[in-house]
Image (cartoon, rainbow, N blue to C red; front, side, top):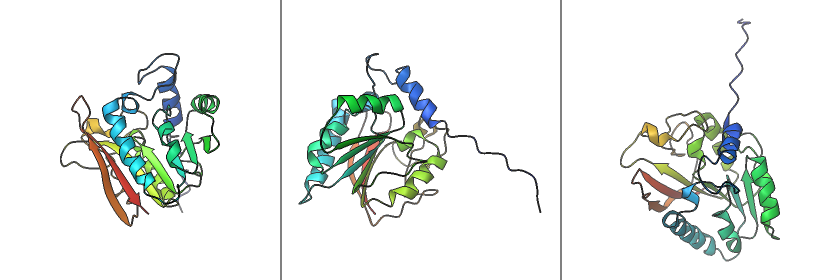
Length: 221
């Protein structure tokens, strides 16, 4: 029997990284505000995304509930409130969530400060992850995708390279995205292999800098 003690795993640095990003405005924006980067504010990226997701949500006879996993500054998510029965917005940064609870108030709106890789996820019909997984390690994505099976629908947006690429090359959480390695997140491929009954590409947009493409998929579990 091997009595050698196992080395503890290095803690996931995601929370510290995201707190630092917002505190130091590493994604830009006015210094007095939380800002999730141009991807959450540039009209040519946000408007088409809102259109396809609003169309999807409007297709139901009765509004469904949404859980926004990684809501960021909420500039995008707030525009989906009229299209759902309840909206639970989740982020890992405590001060960000505290700000939202004061700034955005509605009968169908709830904010929770959670680490979506470690904590139990809120109940809802549909989960939304908009350019969230690209920032975290494969270990964390695996932990998240194992919990996504509780949702009927999952909408995932990721920044991917142009053309063919090797998916899911690992990164350290909070240190850029896989695009710099010529890779991107594909939750249907190993090591995640999210079990879905259907997959539909809703949108593909080229950023203004021409680097890669931002793709949105709708998965039914």
